[in-house]
Length: 289
Image 1 (cartoon, rainbow, N blue to C red):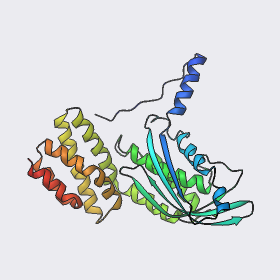
Image 2 (tube, one colour):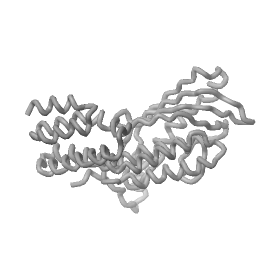
Image 3 (cartoon, one colour):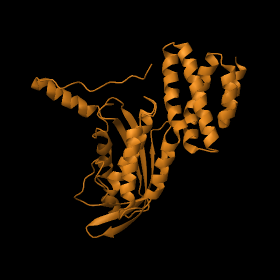
Image 4 (cartoon, one colour):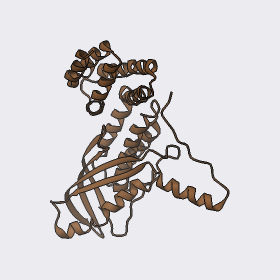
């Protein structure tokens, strides 16, 4: 059983319905809502004024872009926090130094320690997987990572296409005049793609949820066994892995609850070992059986 997938409707010949289809497709881009906050306390008032339209431009960048032609109904929510560290005028443009946090407010949190971008009064933000622009490329990099992680929950290793798009952005950006932080972002994408255990864990977790909710108990138990194998793979390859910990911090209690309801004492014993930061949670579920 696979997770639900809505495919694009084929074009309709009648103009009226074609127009409706175009309108709906625009409303069904991958990111439904983007919340953006600025911490600009280190900037002067005149520097802050140049950022007046930036927040809405960043929101449109995510919400209006169709990132994937196949998965059109994801309706992801994205939270971005930008901390402005300083400003330096460069001709007709202003160059800003920032730190940022990209999050889905659930199991994905990416803190970016430093970036630089030039903001021109005449420039606009739009997604282009080939053309390099300091700010658009930064937004595109994390947009593809978050979308890749989401698609990993829909099919095993399903987000590979978007991880590779993020990698391509980072490679081009590393050779640009605004290369600050891109070497670290290359390390990030390498870590995320190399950690096959975590990528498979995302899929097995969400599939277990779906099977349990649908009452497919035997299949759910099989997938929970796969989940434990995924965690064991991560445990064997990484002594401490922050992104797996973020994922399990959010999902561990629900996974443990399902195991308790299915009477899986042995699984809960293994979870205490494989996800030791939440061992007390699994121990409590184990004692309830």
